[in-house]
Each structure stands twice: as C-alpha cells, then as structure tokens.
Image (cartoon, rainbow, N blue to C red; front, side):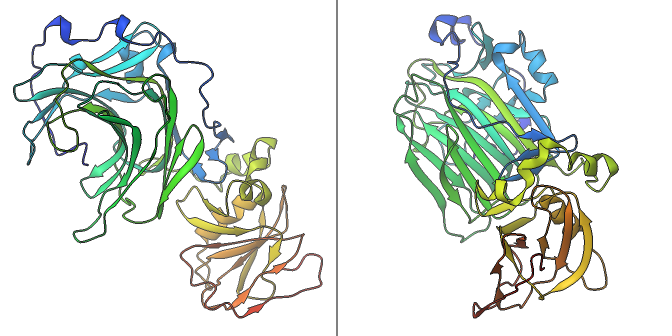
Length: 413
C-alpha cells in the first residue's frame, strides 16, 4: 500500500475547468462538534503529548482560517507535482496541483477527477515541507468521498520499507485500513482493518497516528483503536495526505465521477533530525517547573498509559508509587520533574553508564532522580507511595521475575 514512490517532477497536465470540484460538491464548514484529541502542552521548550512524549516541532493548519494555499505553504505544507510509476497497476499516477483546491467554507479538497480513461490518472497530494521527521503525532480532520474508486491516505513515508498508513478505500468506507509496511523482505505483513465511523462520508472525523519508537498507535476521534508493534519505521521521512487511483486491485477505479477527499485541518507534533533542543538548558529546566508541565508527573502520565516516549525518542515503562530500592543505583541528581529524570538518564555518560532506569522522589514537583542501570536485575519494584519508578523498555529488566524489593523508608530509592 505504498502511497509515494521515488517521484520525478513533470510538467502539469492541462485539465478542463470541469475537472475541479465546485463549492456545491463540498461541505460548507467543518462541524464544530467533531471530537478531536486534546492539544499538547507547550512548556516553552517542547510540545508535550501526555502519555506519549515530547516533540520539538509543530504544524497546525485550520483550512477555515486561511484564504489561500500560499498561507498553507507558509505553515509547512507543499503541494505535490510528481509522476508515480504504475508498477504492476494498469495506470501511472500524476499528482497535480490543479487537483488541490481551497474552497469556500474552509475545506481543502483533494480531487481525483471522474471519467479518466487514459494514462496517467490525475490525482492529488500534499506533504510536509520537512523531510527529516523522526517520530510524531499527526491528526487529520477529514470527510471521505462516497464515490468509489480511489484511496485516501494519511501517512508517514520515508521509503517503501519505512511507511505507516491510515487509509480508506472509497469502494467501502465502512473499513479503515491501518498499516506499517514491511521493513524487510520476508517480514510478516502488518496491515489491519478496523470499523470506520458509520458516517465517514457524510461527517468530519479526526484520524490520528502516533509514530513512536517500537510502536505505531492509531486513533479515531481521540480514541485509541489499534497499536502495531512490528515493522515500525525508524528512519526520517515526512507526513503526507493524498487521494489517488491507478486502477489496481487495491484502489480500484478510476472513479466514474469526481472523487473528493475533504480535509478540515491537519495538526502535527514531531521531532526533526535537524532540530535539536537542549532540555537541560536553563529555559527548558525552568519550563519544567511551571504549572503547564504538571502533566509530566508520573501519575498524570500513567493515566494515559503505562509507557511514555520522551523527547529523545526513548520508550520508558513507568510504574508510579513504586521503588526499586537498593538496586542498580549509579548516580543521584536533582530533577525538576519526573520526565526531567528521563532526560538526565538519557544524557548520562558517567563511569557507571548506561543509565536505563530511575526512581524519583518529587511527585508533581522538583525532587531527586536516583539514576539506575537495571540490566540483569531480577527483583521487581516494591510499592512506595513516595517514589515513582521508570525504566527503558529496551533494558534487560526484569531478567526474571522472582523477588520483590522491600523498604520501610519513607523515601527509599
């Protein structure tokens, strides 16, 4: 289900005016009642998605708030103009800027014109300007077309083996296809189907993908519907949104009449390999002490799940109100928040490195980070309401689950 191949730029094909969508074909406004995921908290340093992680960059485009696509370009979106080879499909695809239109009512329309019978099939796509995205949370508010014969894709793409997709086949809008493409030949396929909103073609909904180290999470209207932990991309790339047909068994078509994917907004929070943030700087450490970062306490994160990906892309398993007392200690440092301990653990280069776990005494405020190397430790953490514990998912811990640590101290570590 590759949405993008290595594309060469080509000249625009000339299309008659009736190939473009008219305002009458489109909804006039995205309903204000559509449920969307909560926005991350910007702490003056990074964008914090509770339970997911922190990201250095953001992009938010509400198409009802702009008057031209040049404004969208300023907001880090480009319109594709490329020819995609047919491969084994009947037709090539031509992503043409003439099929991308901002129409009255605040809608971005990506159109595959109807009635096409000759090669290439004119299609539509937008991308992020940033091509060095490495992990992020991307949300799309959209309405599908009821005309069969195309694929709507909301994707991350690095190359054909580094790709994650949310896709509709408009021949059957009752199903949403969620995929991590195979990262190596012979890997098991990881494409799954979930029920789409029953009104996907008549109402706007939010479709969200969180791409993290070791897992890709998929949401509809803010609710997690599937997690894939195999074939997870691990190299930089970009986000894209497209509507296309090449006549293959997957996309079918081409459509008999204009097929229009309607997008109300796109939002993305992500890390870029070219953007570095020193979270131990005075600005970032100060941000860690503000009220806006209370979501970085263990209790707040645990409310959204038992794992958390920090701003360095490291996945931690978290265990609030627990301690691993007397095991694996390698350093003691001051911490501004629970997640600041993660940052300090990631950066630790002392003689006892690596750091792959910690215990924290600060609750929702400042405290002490007891940095640990938990590799090979068999003991499980004990219950302690004064301590919060976390360790890297990649650590060899627990080596075997045979005993539980114990301590009567109020603030053990």
